[in-house]
Image (spheres, one colour):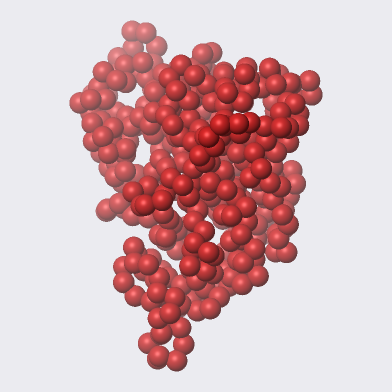
Length: 410
């Protein structure tokens, strides 16, 4: 808001956050349901709008942060002539802008698009593709785990929507905040990098359900039930890199993101009776519980027999079975995805599905190993199409006053 105008500006956010948004600030906005009444100028920002996710830390925000309502993904390619110094300058400018927006402050040169909005759990996460290192003369600093994604027989990939030198993941609980953040980063990159592709997605809005729930995807299935939790033993080692010293020390505290745009064949899926849909997934559609019994949080019993005792409760080609850590040598990934709906394709079928993002300490022992099995044995493959693909090295977080990947670039 401009000077002299009543109400709450981003600059005044922290003056009311303690009183108005303490629940959101303390709990990380996990259950935010306190929305202000439309048109009530005296209502402060709700807990949802006031929630702040710190930009600085050992790990970048947006990895273990509870998944937000809105997501924007974008890949950038360096412009000809943009060298290591130019890339370093860009990451400094991006880090400064992201830190300001995450704290609820307008970044330098702000267009005041989201001036009256709170940070709304905004996170901005940065990563590097394989091509970045050759273009900046940093080939000897590229980590061995940043491999080229191998082809899978069922892939139908669009190269123009895959890969990229640089990657940005933006998440927030307000679509205006995510759109504004992406615009700021695109403008800040002008002259150094151009957008290669961008995608937008969504999840359930805060307060849309009567209690905190795992999100549902556009197939109607609860998605993410088997995700590892930060409180579990060994979580850090499975998701984050411990790089120590040497040429790849800049990845210490970082992770690897595999990004796939997966279109769902929703018309075909919707024609399946519910019990057949559940058989394909291996979980109940209403509760998310595995077909072997228990609640959503129960570990699937892959040896359990079905009601008739003659067949397995979880079918041999069920997604839950084929993707389970027990079926893949203990491999674990943290899935943190967004649904997308881009209207209709020329043939009239839905152009909708999942912006799949999987985090792991090593994609060669994570996504790639699991996908090789899924591509040939997963019954769900008949109802989805992988249309874009990328893998990015995501460095650790930055200390206050520092920028992302400074030890790599400067």
